[in-house]
Length: 274
Image (cartoon, rainbow, N blue to C red):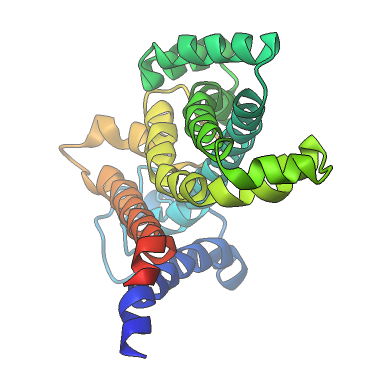
């Protein structure tokens, strides 16, 4: 029992923290249906207090309430970005590792082109061209994120293809699709999932960065990076306008990274043999 908790205790604890954060953010509008857009000018620019945990902005809007709604936008967009990048990168990586067709070679050259540029800089350029708000920022980051998963998956598939069970499966009459998705994919999915979870924090910071630069969420959409962008002009007189959303970003990213590390340790086959 002690060995079990030693291996999985960190996973359960970090997972509970992540679920707690998500629960607070997504259930808050139901438990406290306060209008995040309602202005109360008589309460403008008030520092954090018992009445307003994160203070108020220049229009008297409660920053804690707005941060909860903004968290929904930021986190949901991050999950969409991660899922899309992971799905496209995995499918392309499976194809390029399993087959040696001309199309696979073309796809690998496209991957090399994307990986040759700094990801965030490339995403900034794409987002500025698209100029489609949060959806444009998600698309821009997805376009530069999927090649990473393609390389990871393809390398793992090439290793699996050299193993005896692949040849045995072919001799038994198994189709390519059955072999690829029934045998190969389950054997390589662990590092892909762990990488995707760890990248959630990175993607969230990159999405928030694009919004902070004015290339992500547009008014009146509430989003953590956009909130920081809105408050940066008043940093000296009302620093809580930036510190509140910034602190939530740090807390969520740290909790996701702890969960990803714990999941990696829990799924590590070396640990199971100890």
